[in-house]
Amino acid sequence: MALEYYDSFFRQYPAQLAEETQRCIEGARAAFAVAAEKETAHVQRVLSERVAETGVAIARKLAERPVGLHGGQTRGGLWSALRERGVQPRGAPTGPSG
Image (cartoon, rainbow, N blue to C red; front, side, top):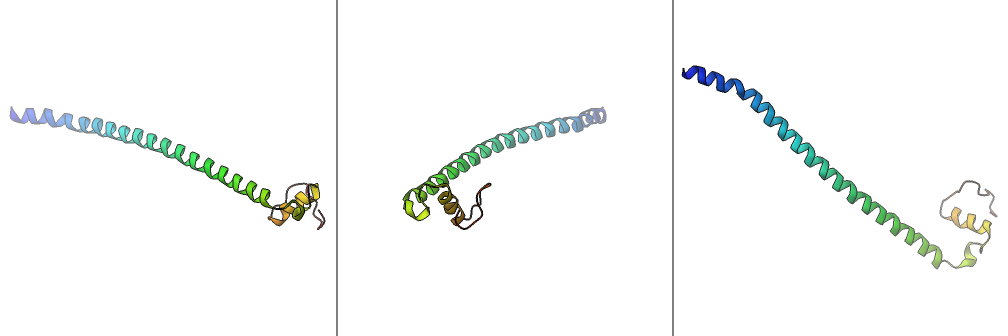
């Protein structure tokens, strides 16, 4: 009688173990998904802040530079200023005079 009881009890054990394991895995999966979403939002926010800061820094540098040094308001002067910073825009003249 006792052996039958233990046999029936332990026969259910693998199924119960598999069910509990599946619940644990799904819980961990959900927790990781939430953490990944939070980290993604944080990284996107930091990246957009850095891009904005860089844009402000570049604009500030250009604004502080005297107009006469980069050729005034002419198109050639703009190309010259960009080339000095290592930028070669598409369609820009390639000659030294801009």
